[in-house]
Length: 21
Image (spheres, rainbow, N blue to C red):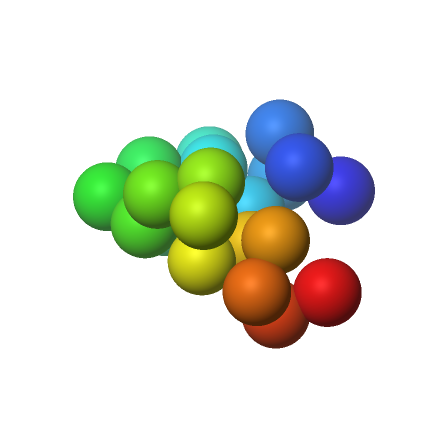
């Protein structure tokens, strides 16, 4: 799901993803 999120919002940093999870 990481690559999908990056493709959808490449501007969003990985840190945001970690916080969301």
